[in-house]
Image (cartoon, rainbow, N blue to C red):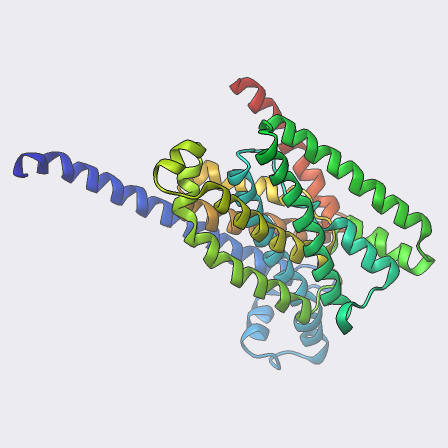
Length: 347
C-alpha cells in the first residue's frame, strides 16, 4: 500500500479542490441571490433607499406606516415568490432534463390547463379555497401529463427526439384548451385568465408564499437524496443499473416530484417560461454534472434569474410593472435559440 500513496495523495488533493470550488460557486450564487432579493424589494415606483429598507427588515416599525406597508405587504411577498418560484422551476427543470435525458425539457407548461379550469369555473374542491384548489388541480394535471410522457418512453422505447415532439404537441393541446376556456369565460374570469397566462408576481401573498415554500422544503431534501443516483443516470440507463439503481422507479418518483414543484409554481404565478430551461443550463456550465451541486445550483440559478427578471419588470418601462412572464420570455427565447444551435453543432 505505501507504493500507492504517491498516486492517492494527488487524487485526494484534486478531489478536495473540486469540492471546494463547487462549494464556492454555490455560495457565490447564494450571495448574488440575496443581493438581487434586496434590490427587488427596494425597486418600484415608490423609491425606498437601501438604508431604510435594511432598517425595515430588522424592525418593521423603523419607518412610517406607508413604507412599512409597501415593503412588508406588497414588495416582500412578491420578491420572495420570485425567489421560491424560480427555485422550484430550476430544480424541476434540472430533474426533468436528467431523468428524460433531454436538455430541452422544461416544466413550465405542466398544470396550465387544470389551473385555467379552476380560474374559469371557480371550482372549490373538498371545500378548499381557491389557492389550494388551484394547486391541487395543477398537480393532478401536471402528474397526468408527465406520467404520459414517461409511459411513452417506457412502452414504446421512444427516442428523446420523439419525446420532445410529443412535448411540443402537448404544449399546443394546452394552448388550445386555454384558448377554449378564454372563449367561454365570463368577463371577470377572462381578465384573470389572460393576466395569469402572462405570468405575474403581483398577486403574491404571505399565504401563497408559504405554500410554495412548503412544497420546495419537502421536495428539495428528497431531490438531494437522489443526487448520486441521478449523477449515475447521466451516463445512461445501463450504467446506472450496473450500480444497482432501479432506473424506472427513480424516473417515476423524480417525475412525480417535478409535477408537484411545477404545480406549486404555475398555480400561483401563472406560466413563467424558460426558468426551468435557463437555470439548469447555467448550473451545468458552472458546476458540471455532479448532482450534489448541480441540483441546488439549478435551484439557486433559477431563483436568481427570476429575481432579476422581477427587477427588470419594474424598471424597463417607467411607471409600469410588466408581467414577469413576458420578461423571462424575452430573455429566454434568444437563449433557447442559441441552445438549439449548440445542439446542432454538437451532432
